View 1 (cartoon, one colour):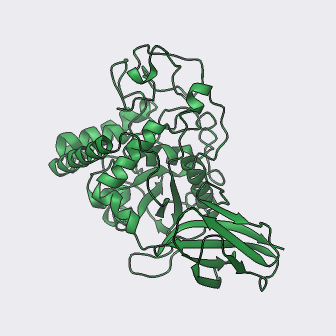
View 2: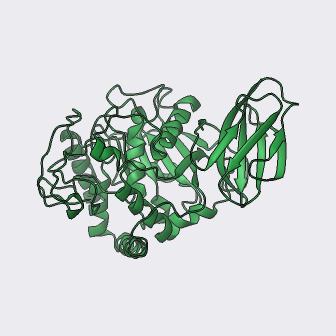
View 3: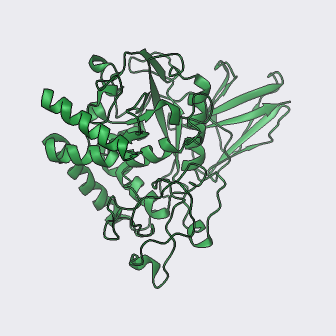
Length: 419
């Protein structure tokens, strides 16, 4: 045990001194070499995902519904500053929804702009806990800290267990677990790839790189650390292939080869490799420093590619734990959700005086609940046809949310204004 602890400390210190931002790949390598259960699960997940991609060479959004993933945020704090506010947590959920639905605004050269993908995944804070009780999707644990000098670290996985000063995961086939804590200096976060061990599945993020308001580090103010790490959780590799030359690969054709990670300078003209995938033909694109799976600064990041979307979808369908999220019945709280118009849903008129219409491109009735800012359900329409008007004349002027259920599953929460 002492040898193991010393090893953890040395590796964490090494990562810190080398300004390592994401420890996902290092943790993965360690697990593959030392944990046969992890290795077997990962390889099985990779094989299932590879099979799905072979059967779906052009993933063009054939899924009938958006996947809305219930999220639980485990806040681990040693002082008041680390006990981050609900508003800071909501701001992170907002960023995830904008970025995974491609609703942000970021400059991209035309050859990358055409590849920017709507991943068709949304996130919301869970509304039902593992025991079936109402929840806001947030747990808070006062702790003395992690096992290395009071810091939490990736190889110790101490953030994920009550017995080590952290918080046990909620069932990982029903929730995306996010742990927010004081990570070892130099580390911003890490994730577990699909196929890993269930009780450690999820994403760990350092407190000051979570969200866009509150206790935020000025170097990572945009909430993109969580976007990056959840990309790993959905099966994505670093865009440069985790090597220091042009031979490594993230296994995705439409992300150009990089020699190394971006140095956070957002140099959009840099081109470190010429040996591109045949996808690019004779054209040699610049490095895709705007990609969430690089190490660019938050203001530079702005896209996932279509190839990355296909890879994420392949794990959502192939990995049993990820696939189970499609049928999670833990619901979603409206907290942090934004009004996001997309191709599947439209709401009109907004603002409205007395009638609210919601239209979706699926031939199936929906249940629609009208909720106020306090989370109180004011109306519950059980069988709403696409485009059917709902009477909201009884509402007082203000801001409300329409929570839409199709096939008994929350698929969208939309904000509207009653005048």
